[in-house]
Length: 145
View 1 (cartoon, rainbow, N blue to C red):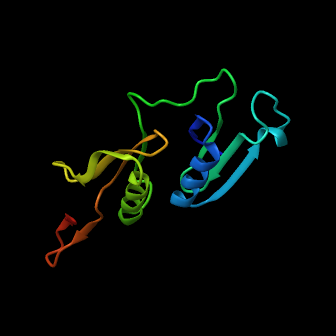
View 2 (cartoon, helix red, strand yellow):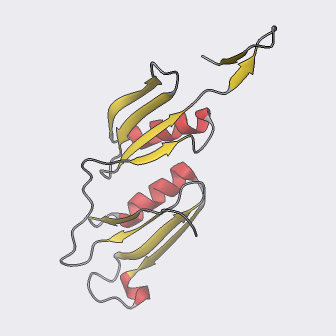
């Protein structure tokens, strides 16, 4: 493990959320309930720790008694250029399923594509990419449109 990995405290739906993220992003899913971890600060079947390990890495748990669960304001998780355009478009669409498209995935005046979506678990995502450059018959380099 390296780099910044978000750790999200969910409101009782960590297993559902992390399973959904693994279905979208791929990778391996690890889920451990409170009972298996010897935790007594919540229901035994609640997720005490879970992780998606792959192209996108996320960790999370069900919030324990007295802990606040995630609310996102003034931020989002950025997946700019983390995969090819087709994959990023697919991720955007899958995260939007049951969620809210805040700003559609679209071409911007500077030539890049991006959009913002809040998924059904309340997590906000900025997803975008640059189109690969191509060479025309004269050898000039252009971004695909």
